[in-house]
Image (cartoon, rainbow, N blue to C red; front, side, top):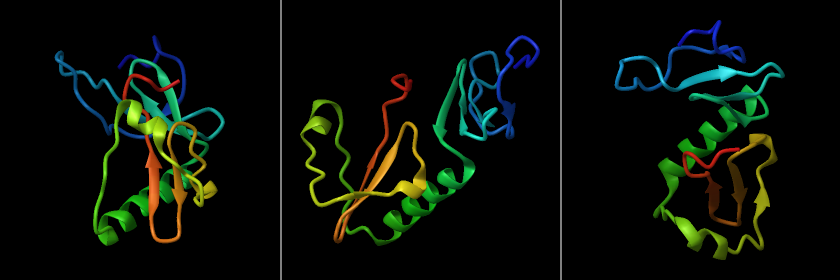
Length: 117
């Protein structure tokens, strides 16, 4: 990626996917105000900071280790989710995804790729 032709956040590293021309198409970056996000043809902040990103990774790891079941809901079914009794996991600082905790369960909401703001 030619950074001179694409001003914006500084790259965090070369973590991403290569496109058909073998150039990196997606890169994890830190934004100008400390946001953590993805630069995939356009800058998309995912978390308010790297601490939120780490909290999200920790929650995902815990859920993956302890969950008896994992349910993936897509499309219009997402709108019918009832989060009554859940509290938001504010430490995640999610800008595009979010976590909610319940008594003995957790819910993560992640937008479909291509629908990020």
